Amino acid sequence: MYFIHYTQHYTQHYTQHYTQLNLGTTAIAFCGTIASWWLITYVSRRTIYIGGQFITLVRLLLIGIVSVSSHTKGALWAQAAICIIWVLTYSMTLGPIAYSFISEISSARLRPLTVYLARTFYQLVNIFSQVVEPQFMNPTALNAKGKTAFFWAGTGLLMLVWAYFRLPEPSGRTYEELDIFKMEPAEHQEVAPQTKAE
Image (cartoon, rainbow, N blue to C red):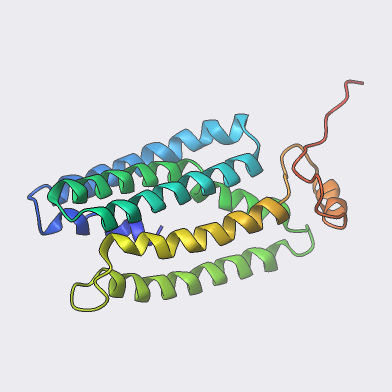
């Protein structure tokens, strides 16, 4: 998400539409979060996470490819548009679903500690990202501009591989089932149990 906070950088020096782009991105993120409420109700959490991770990864690669291939004003607008679509996807999938996973996957006894560790790790990554990203985008530093998306796509690929092999499906399971489930091998963990009518 850190890369996308710099969406406006693409147009800041080239257009007077900087404020409108910033407000529009925020509004789209809000609408994506509202849409996620419906998505979480009807689609399994693991599917949402892995699908969202894959789609955002592809969009980051597109931003990087456009940045490498052209430096015209139209290419900058294309990168900004892809960033806005990325924000919508993130707001519908990865952003909200992370809170669900943190609270559902941790064991009942370790839940407070797990939430604490997750938030601490998130803040550490946030600090790193807030230091690194401005250096990537700054014309007097690395000046990578849209090529920065390749770096974030690399981190996204690592998380996608991890999620595919290690992330269980918590939908439709009780906390007791999840605790037992965590002791089993990671094979076939994406299949949620079927409920039987009594």
